[in-house]
Amino acid sequence: MARSQWGSRLGFILAAAGSAIGLGAIWKFPYVAATNGGGAFLFIYLLICLTLGLVLMVGEMALGRATASSAVGAFRKLKGGAWPIVGYIGVLVCFLIYSFYSVVGGWTIAYIGKSLEGSILTADSKVLSAIFSHFIANPIEPLFYHAGFALITLSVVIGGVQKGIENLSKFLMPALFVLMLVLIARGLTLPGALEGLVYFVTPDFGKVTGGMLVDAMGLAFFSLSLGMGIMITYGSYVEKQANLMSSALWVIALTVTTCFLAGLMVLPAVFAFGFDPSAGPGLTFITMPAVFAHLPFGQLFAVLFFCLLLVAALTSSVSLLEVVVSFMIDEFGMARRRAAILVSLAIFLMGVPASLSLGVWSEYTVFGKGVFDLLDYLTSNLLMPVVEVLLALFIGWRVWPTIRDELAQGRMPGWLHAVKGFVRYAAPLLILTILVRSV
Ligand code: PFF
Figure 1 (cartoon, helix red, strand yellow):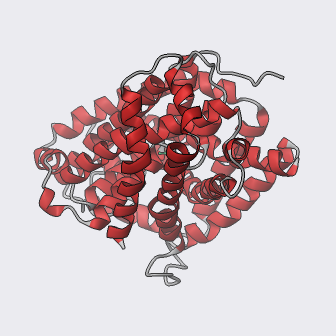
Figure 2: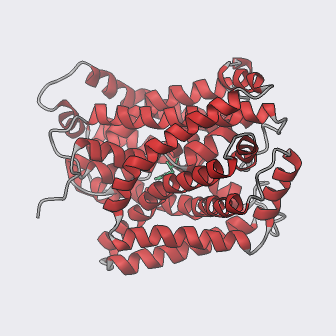
């Protein structure tokens, strides 16, 4: 049977961008950029996305299209041996990410509720910080929302409404963009906002550290959904004539633009309201309500913002769950429904200690990190880079002719030589150097 395909190249780009654009861009990027000193981090993040990110994304897509398989199968089909292990690690990373992703997805649901009751519509930084920290430290409430988020994702994956979500997000993602532009305009015109803008866009390379480099690289992989086999799986549904390089460029451009806009939306406001830029994972949740409080129809904006954020998060979480579910179907012959329910249950359980580690279990740490931070760090800053090194070596040294043919499409464009050199030498060396420097 022919493998099913995306309706169009646009459909493929939007689906890949839907997986990429999510909490990573809007929740994670602003606080990681803020903690890492702003401008220099932004610059390095962009540089990594446009070099390493681009080559690895196009490589993953080509791998998928060449083999018409998902992550593990792609390695098995082309080379076998120990290579499928790379795919297995990718699936594991998906599982681990999804468990804390769902906890944060739950926060967005909770904040829709808080916007509706109006409790967060204040510009008082102390009140907003207190609301957020009380909420995440509560042992029960966030778990309830975490379960809610996992359930919605599950129902999308087994309910076959993915197409519906795709169609819906064609309208909702642009709506999110427009809303962000409005919020940026409001934030930038607040007194004191300029300082935040300068902080965000002016690079001070004196601040660059090994830790910052690995954070930027981890965030690049996380925000672009790389290193987990998602782009392999998505690439496997692309028609042969589609140009993968320009598709990858589109996905990256859309994602980094969203990150940039999210930074512009949050950081000037952080400075204008005198919040702490290094507040950590709460930054977007603490700062944005203060902006809404300064807008006419602020409550409406608040509800809209968290609803759209939820949709963006769902198009990403669906891709995370999908990878693990397809793996269970392919490897264990499990029925789809059963696999999806089992995996969702497992990620719910895995998310419980992650959520509790932000409150009642905060004293239980490994290497100074609670479960939530540990999952985040382990996946973005260790496992994803390791997968990417192996992937680059695989593409560059083991299966290059296949990948080259997939990308060349009968011609041999000059940039392919650059891609080959980059993926063979520069990519593995760069990732390894950053990893070693951060240790
Ligand atoms: N890229 C998504 C985001 O930034 O929200 C998160 C994500 C989705 C990471 C899928 C990894 C992944 F495979």
